[in-house]
Length: 243
Image 1: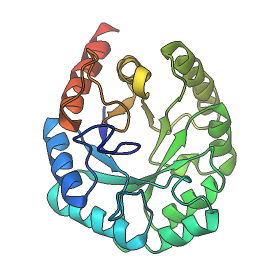
Image 2: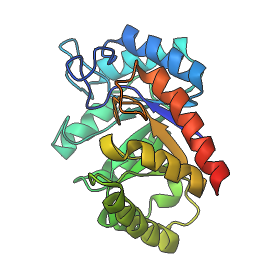
Image 3: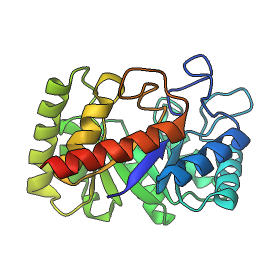
Image 4: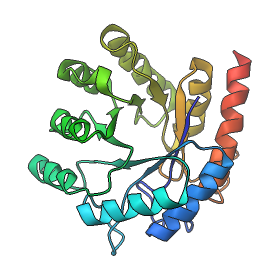
């Protein structure tokens, strides 16, 4: 099993006072998360104003900083909300001078196949983000599934019951069209901990971090990403042993 630490997507200092934003913050959090047991680190690069960015200079700086300070594979987002224009997203990726080990591509977004192809052409691993069965179908139709490092099964529904129904629908598509691609399962907010456990039961990889939840299993505010990683490893292993 691989555990990915998702350090800062959708998070800011108002959401959680320990949310890492600057390169030095991200570096310190990545070191702590890896020491706690994470093997992969996923970040959302920020500019000097704290806004998410795909800018070549900013992404290169943050990836280089992390690579110099932590022994883990480094991944970044390519979310369309950052650069909605597909051509603009492709131009930004072309300007990355220091390449991450992998990048996530959401296959419900316009231009996902083009973005994934551009990353693969630069030897950047692709995590195919699947929010629903339609996204899984888009991945299979693209012909890129077998070239992906892994698929991220990441339902967005607010309850575990609804999320697991979406997981089942995604799995049906993947079982038919991309059965051999490694799978990472995770939830968000109210479903985060239940889906860590579900990943343990299914033998999937998983992830945790302030991007997915700011709260521990008992509902208390997490001290930071490292605390979440430690708890997720324990929770995963308990679920794995319960099968």
